[in-house]
Length: 224
Image 1 (cartoon, rainbow, N blue to C red):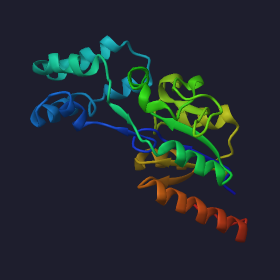
Image 2: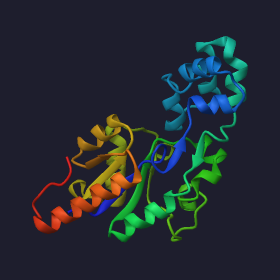
Image 3: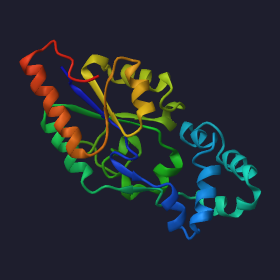
């Protein structure tokens, strides 16, 4: 029986902006696409979420990929205000999942920079985790893992091990909701059930069906 629901942040609980982030910042679409390629799609972006390397080193490596974009990279990424934006329905959705009887946690690749610069988007995350939500308040999650705090990212195995160990979760009793298949595959390798996020309603439907299946046949595995 599923007892724990673990939610991703970007693309699930909050909007994560890529191309549009640079366009909203004043770049042309052509320049924005070039910026995405040398920043978010570069091997150095993960270092941002891992949180070990100095940020100046990360920016320097990105600038070296296309020196002509150095000024734009500096301007856009020295501060990342707006790279994550609020989904106003998230707190109600979290509370709905709780009311189904589940413990709710987060597991996300997330940087200290985005956490610092996007406080309005993080009202669903408890202050103990760097968010702006009050611990214990309606729709606020105060348990889970952000990659920058454990210095590893999805889909590498260590981040799932951190989650299970820190919170005493049993994989067979846990389902992970993410919008990226590779991250779900990493969780599945640990025996964690998974849901590929397409909509809030779809996730609630799958959770409700799983709960009904468990009541009808306790040995049935409702998730893959």
